[in-house]
Amino acid sequence: MSGEGRSHGRTMQQVLHLLIVDPRTSEAVTASYGSRWLLPILTCGERVRADPKALLWAASRGVECEIVGQWLGRAESSGTDWLMAMSAVSGSLRSCAQLDWTPLEQLNSRAALVEYQGWTLAKVTERGSLPSRPGPFGRFGWTDEVKRWIEAVIGTPVNRLIRQFRSTPHEVVLRATAGGANVFFKGMGRGRELEPRVTTALASIVPEAFPWTMALEERDNGSTWWLTEGCPGVPAIDAAVVARALAAVQQRLTGAAETARHLPLLDLEAAVAWGASFLDEGHAECMCQHVQRAACGDSASTWIPLDLHPTNVLVDDAGTVRFI
Image (cartoon, rainbow, N blue to C red):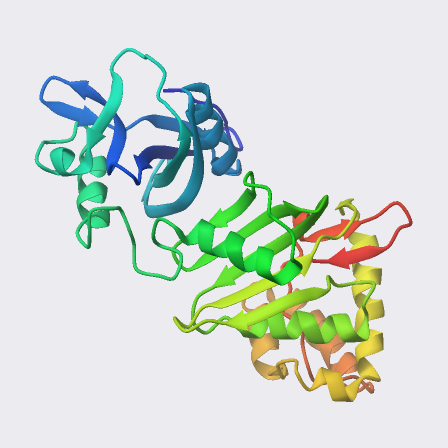
């Protein structure tokens, strides 16, 4: 086990239970404690991306893996437990005290040392020999399908070492390198097709501020597969710079009625009521006055759903801001 990370004076952790499976043999990496078994456990801070840490741990034991998904979270007072499903793609487990490959079927017939691990393993293997969860990306093998799709779109082989930023059964985000350039893939479950359509519409109005969509496809299983170009730059940390860039985008939208029709309409009354619920009476009244003043102007009644986390806003060397 290894641990790190404190948040605002109190320990808040992600506890990663690594389910490293060789899909060719349906075996998992475990340690034995008498008649009981234990999956490897890592801990990291709540804001730390868990995938690189899990992959590094596996590689240090001689096994190269791909992340299949971060599944079945369980919140506790000190943090969150996650089952990190990983597919072993090459290498062999180095000789290590206690660690060995164990058939999944055998694990299900024995008790786990940690109750959470026994429960999650039973849940993810109830539908077949390999772990899975309901959802378009909740199974082993989805990464290979995505790579083949990306290669078909761009006509260039994809580097096998991809970087994943999110891996759930219903949504995945990853960066792939092909032909020396980065591309970004986002896969979304049913009902999420608005986001890529909005971004594609915005890119046609303000191409310098949004990534270019290389491919967009709605799959037979209801998921949406979306591939965009990589954008240069580093995360924006100056809120004023971001606000000015976003205001410029809004101004461009005002005169782009044909494309702006793809954007969702804003229920201004509901938005004001929602915002006021977080403010005291004086600040809520001030906000309402500003909103009313803005509503009287000649602006489109559409809105842009954005997550303005710094990692989603990039600034390049020339000062160009891109919303990704």
